Each structure stands twice: as C-alpha cells, then as structure tokens.
Image 1 (cartoon, rainbow, N blue to C red):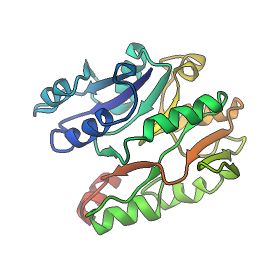
Image 2 (image 1 turned 90 degrees about the horizontal axis):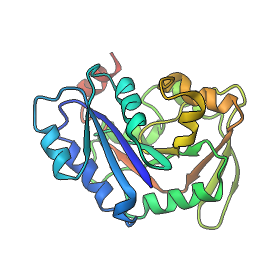
Image 3 (image 1 turned 90 degrees about the vertical axis):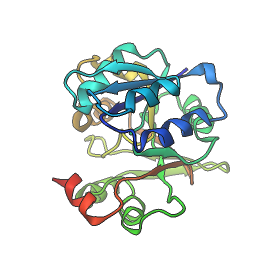
Length: 231
C-alpha cells in the first residue's frame, strides 16, 4: 500500500489536477491512500480533497513540516509518497513502475522523480523545473551533481550512489520511500533539510530513478511568482 502525503493551504486552483493524476494511476485503487494535511484552508480545498476520496487531517501549525509529521502518524502504507499540490504525475504507469523498482532495491533511500516538461507550460517554469531539475536554487542544483549514476537497466531503472556525508537535496515532489525509514528515526524527527541527509549518513546511499519517469511541477508561471516563492 502507498500513502500519498500532501500538505496544503488554500490550493483549490491547483489541487484537482494533482489528485486526478493520482487517481489515474494503473495501480490497485485499494492500495492507495491520500492524506491531506490542511493548514486551515478557507477556499474549496477540503471539498476537493473529499471529492477525490482523500483523508483530511487538520494541521493546526499550518506549515508543511508539521503537516507531514501529522500524516506520518496516520499513514497505513508500506511506502510513503510526498507530492505537493502544484505537482501532477506525468504518466499513468508512474506509481506501478516506481514501486516495482523499489521492491527490487529494498535498501534504497527511495525513488526520486524527474521533472517532466508539460505541454503548454510557461517558459519560466520550463526553465526552473527543467534546466534546474531538482530545485529553483542554483546552489542546490550544484550540490545535486554529487549523485553518481552506477548502472542503468534496459527498462530505464537507474541506480545512483549518494555522498556518504548526506549532502544531497532530495525528498519532495514525487519522492517515494519506505515508512519504515520514518520509524527508524522517530516520527517527530522530520524536517526536510535534515531527515533525508541523516538517512543517507546512516548508510542508505542508493537512490533510484527511472529514465523519463516523473512529474510535472507547476512551480511558477511568471517571474513575479518565482521571486515571491524565493523570499
């Protein structure tokens, strides 16, 4: 079973596309749960989540990190998947292929999605999420080059080795990993900036990707959106 974890706040304009892409997966529907950690939305976010069969959790602290911790405690899946409301899974076989790859690599840190350019995407968004790939921050992009491709199978499954010091930015926008990893560090220990580096330093240095398999990330549509998000 896979638990999708989405922290949200007033996301009515972008959430339907995200949730619809989950429901379109060619993966058993009874093996998917969607946990929405809502930070007190005042628009139709909660109604949209309910219409897509999601479980809504009240995130009193509003921020994403506490919302994810809240969802961790409720998740029933063997695997957890982080998505944001501005993500859209790019293909119906994404989840099935990602889980198959993780099942074949049981000690891997997790599965990291590629950013796939969406048809009709704004040029600035195509630049930020395509050229920079893992982040809108050029510094983080530089750090991301520390993942070294070890091998690639004929079906596109790629095995990367991560640096032993944990210095690699990952863990968001279509990232899948075992719930067991959360339990190994404690459910209240999550913070995106330290959680995955700590797991890497503990020895989970293998990262799985699949060539051309990933998500559309609708990060920004104009320079003003980009500047606002970077503040």
